[in-house]
Length: 132
Image (cartoon, rainbow, N blue to C red; front, side, top):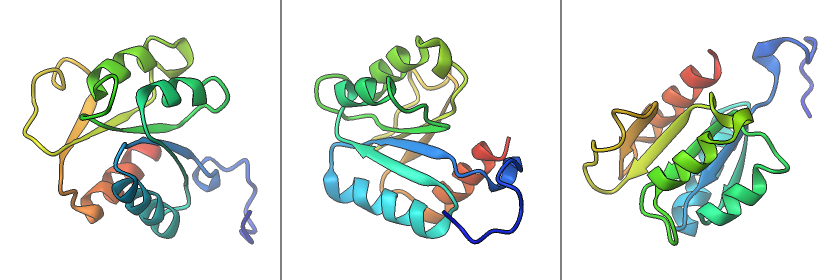
């Protein structure tokens, strides 16, 4: 993993898993690359909601990034299905969207970010959410 001399038990040194649900492969790869190069966390990219629901049966993400405009179910529908899973109900979520979207975000515990995404802002939010 790393050459870090501190104990891996230390909460701040533990690599965290970020599940990215993004159907645009190029945007998804940009997110994965930025997270892997600029943070100590691991990113896992899936293209749609059904795949995300399958992945969380095996991997428990520490943070979830959802695109609002996904095929088969939108990001809010996926959020509701993921947060209905007991082990995921307290996992923080970042929702990205190309349009202004406040409906549905305010009554859920979601941080909304507009596309095009300010990568520095996104990375700051990720670090803040994963340090809690």
